[in-house]
Structures are given as structure tokens and as C-alpha cells.
Image 1 (cartoon, rainbow, N blue to C red):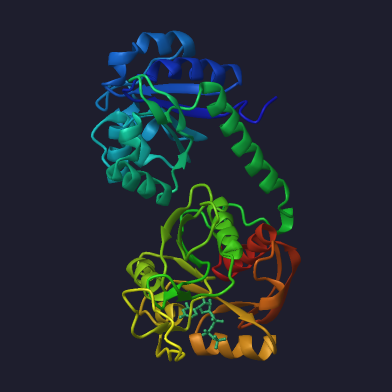
Image 2: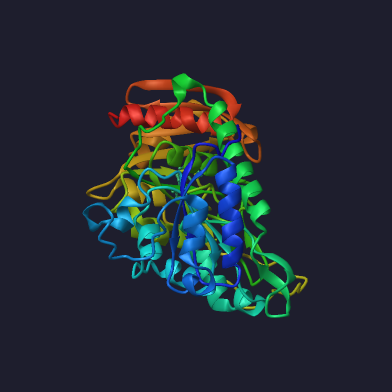
Amino acid sequence: MGVLSGKRIVLGVTGGVAAYKAAVLARLLLRAGVDVTVVMTASAQRFVAPASFQALTGKRVHVDLWDAQIDDGMGHIELSRGCDFVLVAPATTDFIARLAQGRADDLLGALCIARDCPLWIAPAMNRQMWLHPATVRNVQTLRGDGVNLLGPEAGPQACGEVGVGRMLEPEAIVAALEASLAASDEHRRTTPPTDAPVARLAGLDVLVTAGPTFEPIDTVRGLTNRSSGKMGYAIAAAAREAGARVTLVSGPTALAIPEGVARIDVTTACEMADAVMARAGSTDLFIAVAAVADYRVLQVAQHKLKKTGVPPVLELVENPDILASVAALPDAPFCVGFAAETEDLRANAQAKRRRKKVPLLAANLAQETFGRDDNALTLFDDAGEHSIQRDSKPVVARALLAHVARMMGR
Ligand code: CTP
């Protein structure tokens, strides 16, 4: 039995030429043992009749936000409840724009907003529409909202042009879903059961910072550090796995957005501070993993500095301390700090915890974590010191969240 077998999904179909391929996709999913409920937009029905999907799935196809036959008339909420994921294929330019805006004026839009499960979309459109700045912006927004994209791919298009914008073939969509589900199953299998914080953070809003910051000197150069972002990303993924709504404020990294996590990309410490402070008030748990630059350049040159023979002197000013500012809020979330030290781990970490006034500080040796896939942590809290053994960063992240969940009384 494959990883898709037994899954319940909503298959959303929007109005593009590729809508006919959604029928093939539905058949493949059904064959893989998926329970498929189809929801169509009004324009999708101009390309394919709902009766086709009804015949394939053996179930009524949903098309109307005001469908009186759905329990309590709450179709947009009911349809995605209990689902493993929602898949929209094809996803047109217009649907992507509406989703990015959070519109809920038809059944598919409303159920995407009301869902509490992952969302996958397979874009399909003309290459110019895919490259249009508005679409690029909308897709970036959706990625930041934790929406997973499948394709599009390059090739000949229905309009006769050639370029990127074709919907992935149904077989490729199924293969990508299988690969992703298999990867998250594998991820779960590596969790030590005693440390698994599964569902302990359910319903909480968690904010995580990760990665380095980059402080510009001129238009091409800057000050940064060697943080890879892997620990923060692993913590964001583990918090999502534990049932939280997770926002990841990330400095420049090459890492993929963890599934279901909303990412906000920032470059400088001040941008990170703004993104965090705007959300801190509605956060239950704040975990500051980012290696934030302590200083920024006072006068950033608006052109590339030329070599003059006289070494320049850079005047630096201190950046805001994001963690300390959040911890000092009158209604502060539970705050977890990190300390990457190169020596005197215990003394430096304890001093840092007191200085930033946080209930928990996770300390590691910079030379034993930066850029690596594994880590070991020493946690400092009011009760004393606790060790998390060296392991892969995802496993260490889960163990840390198990400790946090216990401290939060969950
Ligand atoms: N931190 C922060 N904002 C800053 C600096 C640090 O939010 N401007 C957070 C980090 O994300 C981490 C913790 O504070 O959770 C400790 O970061 P670190 O750089 O080790 O602390 P500093 O206060 O900068 O101490 P030092 O550089 O003197 O070791």
C-alpha cells in the first residue's frame, strides 16, 4: 500500500484548459486509494462538466458556497475538516491572486481559507501570466503562507507558445505528493517516541527567527555570519508538526520553507525586529534562533565603494535586541533564547538568560553547530541545567519543544 492510500482530500479544480487533466488526476488518486471530494469553481465548469468528476469519484461534486445540502450550510468549513490535505489542480492566475488576497467569495476560496490542513496547488497558465510581477508577488505571498507549489513546468502551451506555466502532468503531481508524504513519514519515524512533542503545541501561535542577518556596507557588500538557519528551520518544522501555527522570520538562507509554515523573508536585523514586533502581541511562544548581527553600518553607501588606497573606517551602531524587546513586552509570549558561544558556555549562557530575562535559554558551541546537520544543546532554566544529546537538528528540535511544552504546562 502506498503512502497516499487511505488519505482524504479535497481536489479543487479551477477554470483553465488544464482542467481536463484534473479528471485524469482524480482517477490516479482514486487508484492510489485516496478518498477524493471534488470542488469546482464556476469557470472550471465551463471546461469540464461536474458530471465527469461525479462519475469518476462516485460522489457529488461541490460547486456552490450556498449549498443547502451540506450540514448546517457550513460547506466551506465542513468540506476540508478531517482532510489530510487540499489539492488545487489546475490553479489559475486568478485563483492564485484570490488565494494570495485571502478572498473567500466562492466555495473553493472559502474552504482554502477555512482549512486546517496543508494546501497544495498546481499552477497552470500562459508563460507571460506566470512571469507577470503580480503573479510572482502572489506566488511569493502564498509560499510565505505555507502553501506548497507543484510546478509549473516548461513546455508547449495550449495557446501555442512555449515556456514555463504548464501544469505538471497528473502522474508527476501524484509522484510529488507521494514523495513529500513519504519524506514526512520518514521524518516522523526518526522521532524518539519519548521526546515526540506531538500535539503538545496544538492551537498555539509560534514565532521563530532563524538564519543570519545581512547588514549592508554598500550596494554589494555587507556584514553577516555563518549561521545556516538549519536549527531554526528544524524548530519551525517541529512546532508545526506539534500542531502549532508557525511563522518563521528568516534571514537570508538557501533552505526550503518547511511544509505548512508561513515564512517572512528579511535581510537586516532592523527588518527582522520590525517583522517580529508586529507579530509578538499575537504570539504564544517566541523562539529566537537567528544569529542577529549586533551592529549595523551607520552610513550605507548608495553605490559600490571604490578602493582609494586609504582603508575606510566603518562606523557601526547597535541593532535592537529582538529577544530582549519581546521578553520585555507587558504581555510577552513565552520566550526561548539561543546562545552560540565559543567558550565558557555555562557562565555566558546563564548571564545571557538573566540579561535577556527569558525563562529558557538553549546554549550550544558555535564551532559545533554552525553549518552542521547535527547539534547538542544545554538548556538553562529556573530548575537548572538539562542536556539534549547530539543528534540530527530535527530530533534535537523536537526534544527542545518537548521541554518547552512541559514548561508551558502542556
Ligand atoms: N538576539 C536577538 N536580537 C539581537 C541579538 C540577539 O534577538 N540583536 C537573540 C538571538 O536570536 C539569540 C539570543 O538573542 O536567541 C542570543 O544571541 P547572541 O548573539 O548570542 O547574544 P548577544 O546578546 O548578541 O550576546 P553576545 O554577542 O555578546 O554573545
